[in-house]
Image 1 (cartoon, rainbow, N blue to C red):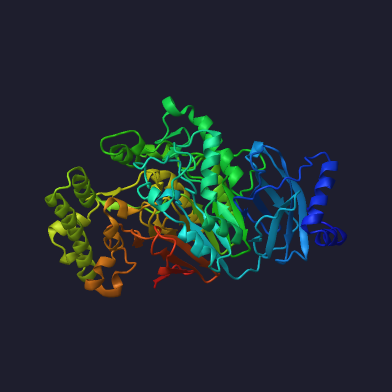
Image 2: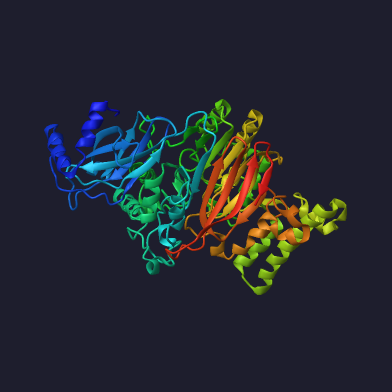
Length: 594
């Protein structure tokens, strides 16, 4: 709550350990716990969901070996010394919320940097955090740091550390903030966990309320994550691993009801704990499963945070155990139109999204989107060779994969350099989608729900808005054009690499990037090969399938600039961070690469 000048002066004059203890007796008189046993702020502080006049503040406070309620006072100031306190209040950390605390600090000024802290009755003071409200309507520049896929056991959070030292103003986390897998060395990402001292807890896949709380506590014990949270406000959305791998409304690939109980129970527990540990503003309805929401950065950009995972998603085609990975179901649904009824997001959320885009006066429309939205369609000739090699990795089959890629890229290069007339009949057949169909490699992404995506893109196209999607989940870095099924460009997609979770390199495909985006043809075509759609994926213009890191996005009215920041290692705390690629999108739609 905002306070009078007199109240602010009172707080400043009494901000010592001695008077903080005295404040404890005041709280006691109001009927709260009068304990002055010191609490521990083991997981730092955080802020999130900024608006132009308020922001969520978070901490965790607990008296060691006690379930006693902890009385806290929070303060927001314009200076690090808290000489000018502009908002303050009282709150409690209780066992019911796992001793996490969230307050909505209101009455703030737009586009302003603030300092905040929590103090207990014993005078123990938390880490001091810095946060920032959303800017006023006339803002000319915004800088975002974008993250996804932070697997504790796979390595150190060096990407978080690098971003905390950057000049980014707001953090966007697109999901997989935690992973649900247990500590078994055979589980995904656990190969080096013991050596690195990154063994997760609890040791089992998380299912119960205590399990999920323990897992978040393990992640939030990380110093780099704490530093980033204390440095800037987060805007977050969940993906599947905050629940279980490849989750959807009615279940998940990594949920076994015979051993892990009812899915709805687990889903609600996971959502509850997410709201406990993340600085997210819970929906006014109180429904913890509704987290799609919108943020206006002045008239520069509107950020629409989507829930493509839990709110409305139908079961994935490749989650039925089909021998072909669901491709036959997918092809039939797309060709007959029966796929139109399958949804990635509900009709309610879809209307909320398209209405919000249509009504926004901002120069850019951003989607905070968990899963890749662009069409990642590979030629069947390459996927078939790759699948054969995976099933039977002989030298001959591996060589056949390389040859299928070479043949396809050569056909594209020939057509680009000399026109379709220069193609051989075999090359013509390779480039003909009728004889060599394009097949999505990941039916858990938007590719698995093509007609739901198409309906959204057609609406955005008709609205004439500038669309930019920020996406996660894939563990690799991508820049792609977002197109309709007819190939009409509607927007662009910046997809961040993972913070630590292994990417294509983990399955022997790390060297595939230049073939995916067509940069392998630079020796033949020069710079004309960059961003020209000459790779295995027509809509893909840049890919990195090896490195971990994050994405910096700088937005002005003239352009959106994405800088792919990579760290050279996640297996040592000593690292270097560098920009691996810069992609700029002008208001005109022109794209440049540096």
